[in-house]
Length: 343
Image (cartoon, rainbow, N blue to C red; front, side):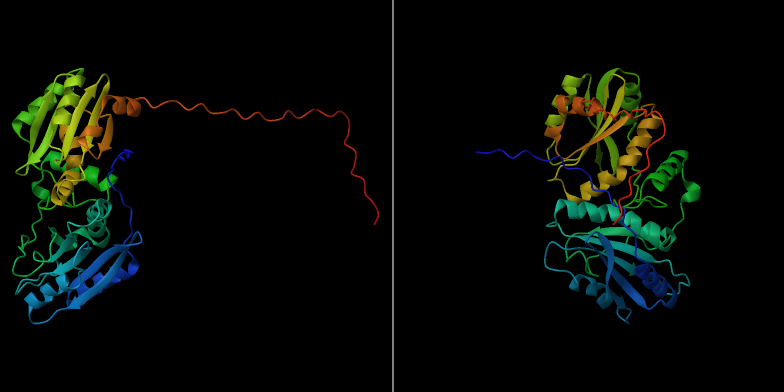
């Protein structure tokens, strides 16, 4: 039997632009206040408007109309949904609802997950009070949907120094930006870090080798495993649940590494949460004195081996062939003029 080598699964990064037509549609919807939702899809590596619904007297019927536009399976879409309170004079009650069916391909899921920040940033973060993820048509019904963002709250003035630092990192280095932490994994999510995790990171910052494995559990960053040396570290990594994403902070000589493992079999929600927490992990490590020098991403825990890490740390040098230019001979005297042959 032939054994197929598993390709390394890397996180998908996008640099899409919101088309001007969509920006105009959204601006008009905010001005006229007559649109309940706008559907958006990603097709042929482009963000496209795929429909909209005018408001009627029944918000429930309007909401349920979103699910009716979806296929039975393997479908993905964004919906810009306008939920305006009775008596409210503002028009900032917009929610981004992203629908990603569990049957979608991994790459498609990651493309949509990494694009939500782009939508918010380019359409105007201040217009949105949050975003929510759904994965079944049953969840995308007015009866089952939980409106978790009833009021817009500006929390910037209450941010800690660390939270402001994380926001600065996201605003300058990523399209997955947001002005505040939200319940979903689309923007930069800053979960609290347990005391034990902070202590272990501080210890590791002063060691020549070792590892701290971090997991996100109950919306808190916790220690998943510890190792004193490289051999023990690789054993602990292989022993972690194969369907669970993890962050591994590994020290090898002068290098302080961050290994991000996101298995293909992990749940969609977990991928989104871990992906959105990566920059927070880096900031948390830096706060503890652990300054990460290199970051590597893997699709499976068993792919993290000493051999692979060494190849990445010390890639083979490719010798460049020297191009020898022909030496131009010095010609003494004046050059002879070219012969002109009469026709």
